[in-house]
Image 1 (tube, rainbow, N blue to C red):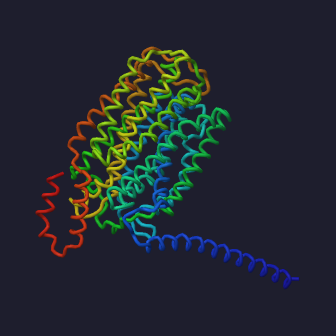
Image 2: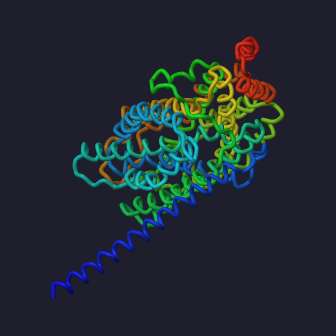
Length: 527
């Protein structure tokens, strides 16, 4: 009897071992395939022209960048203030604290990326690792916490936001660096980043309109869970495509400098980076501030009607108007790409910024509580808005590769991770200040004060409507004017970038680098 039992046990053990062996073999085969595919990509002859597969795979990454940015900026302030019942002030504090958290994670991620050496390069390996975490982060970010205590709901919402911010950093810092390494050629890099922006804007259209439709169709709280699951899955899949197929052409060795806060600030020593960062931050803070209150503005100023506290989803006009704005951004991209090739990036930035300012000022003359028969006017304004925004937002995305070349010229090495980390940090901090300022002002003047979750929110007081109108109309004038002034100082043209690229190649190959110092200094002085 014992012998039979032992025999059965032995058979079960062997069966388990066999299954474990087969699973291990299958898993190792999958890993081998991924690494083999990447090795083949490395062995492919690097050409000046990027393949369509590489461009599309690279651009897909900003489906997450643009999509998540707009889901959060358009939807989260209203969701936290109204649906979670935290009020505008606590919603603004969540955003602000998360940016302080970014002050820790952004420089760490940038320097880790620069110091990485793997079969998948310095950037794509982290996008691959972070892709499933994006799904988890989205679920937590819009989880309808139902604790009775406002303080507990605040803490849970804050921790969820911080987790998503950390995952976003893990993806976007390497991705920003990849945008300058995708090609060494000025035109190819501009084309790839223009396609990337087109994907970003298209994703923005979907992520402004569809989430609200899902929430409205299913209802609360399950609507937010389904919405975050759908978009979290979408973001995970596109990031996997970028990680596996967007093979960079510019291969750089890992940085050997010690990890330090000083290294994080190193790009600030470069004049072109400082100018680029200022222009990028101006466009980013303007877009973030206006998008965070856009639904509030449409619901409580343009229409002045009651709406359910459902995170801004109660008024379809705002959703459609935002969609029109993003569609126009896509249609405007070819126009701005031609302008970049003919007039340069700084000129194109100024053109878009001035257009943006002029259209925004028109909002001061727009009457409040417009009748439904005049809804068409909102669509026209948003379409014209989108045309200007497209130029001011497009240009900084096409500049980052040129700025990284300028940093290599000055420092003698590629520091894309540090550049991306510092840029992302500056963007997030400035966005938090802008969004936090307007949300706290709204509550200070008596608007959006801690409503109960799910209650009917009445039209806001005149003081809150005035704040909404002033921020929508004057933010571009105040912020983008500074960006326009800075753009006149930016000197990297197509010809200048070619000179920098040729010198960097010559400098890397030179045996005696001292003899090139005068030429290097003259080139730096010209910037």
